[in-house]
Length: 575
Image 1 (cartoon, rainbow, N blue to C red):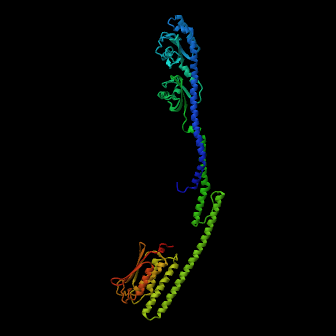
Image 2 (image 1 turned 90 degrees about the vertical axis):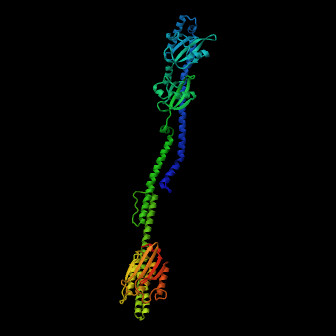
Image 3 (image 1 turned 135 degrees about the vertical axis):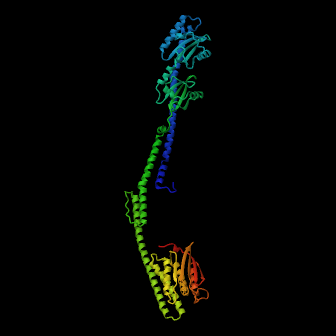
């Protein structure tokens, strides 16, 4: 983002700042909602596991109360004795069979053993004579001489899975046998699976190894792998989160049903991602949507009612600054505030236009006056030059006439300069090359001598514009140098010439004036010569330019004048 924010960015940031408290409250409410969902899920799975334990606990408790009545029957007691007659065994079998017929879905087998674990009486005649001494339930009853519930086993009478429940048969205080009944595991599981549960909750029976007991394939897929359940049982966990075999994350509730042999496990899916956020953070979602809508409204509204009008005003002001005559006509209606701004810009543009017109008229008038001044100065200087020329005609002395000629050339230089000033587009600058060429031409015409060879002029100067502060000293230097050169004798020179060259380099102008004539009259610019005043004048003018001058005699005749001065700042601009 740039160092200076745009109007839309600031407005959008203001909206975000205004929404921050609401967002904070919504986030806090969403967090509470998530925690509430977690607590509700944990309570649900725990209550379903407890409910299953209560349901199955009623079956176990009913068996606990019924079994003493069964085992105390005379037929049962007699069959366990060593001296029991066949009729006693038959009566016991009839009795047990009748009991099972009263509860056909709850119990699958019942039997009575002697003290050594040999079956004496059973609801199934095929079991008589079998040894049950190896059964864990037999050892529990024998050792505890009290009611016992065993781990699920396969019944030897029916082949079905049962939960054995047994009471000891005592002769005095001695263990004389076991009276046992097998609770059907399938019936127990069906009671759990068929019981109504909350939506999405599954309940199953498992043994201490984590294996499912009688559960359907669909219910079994919700359980983790058996080793993971066994680890939870070993860790005595009552709840834990894990992935079922169907790949879904569940929260599980674990409760023991019968001691440490059978457990009830309840499972409820753990919602994740957008779904749980939608349930727990609906308020936060609404606030975020409101924030997005507000940001969009501010962004596009600011663009429609602020940025675009301001951009139009900016473009309009730019066109006005370029001098384009335009009417302020917005493409669509604006708000009253922006219309007021637009009217202010229009009034300002009109005022600027009027002021520019006044300034332009004033500048044109000033230019006209300055040109007129230069023109009149030029005319006055020409008049002075003409008067000097008339006065020179009455002078008989060649020496004095030459002095008058020099003064006339100096006045002519100033006249030519003012003519160039009022003829150019810019009255403050002159064309350096044209000025020098015109000046040399006028001086050569004024000093023409029919009795001597006229030298050729070679002028090479850069095309640049200079102001009067530079043009006047340079023009006078050229006048003095060329006037002195024209007095030289070129009759014996094969190619008589006067060379004027100017070059600009590294902010310095080097001005060279040289000729190849002979100084037969002693007019050379040197100390003691006739040209000493011209030399003094050239040096003074070079100092005025901030430069230096070097005057030297050329080999073979002639004079070489080299003037070096810095480029004035006025030369860098041409109107």
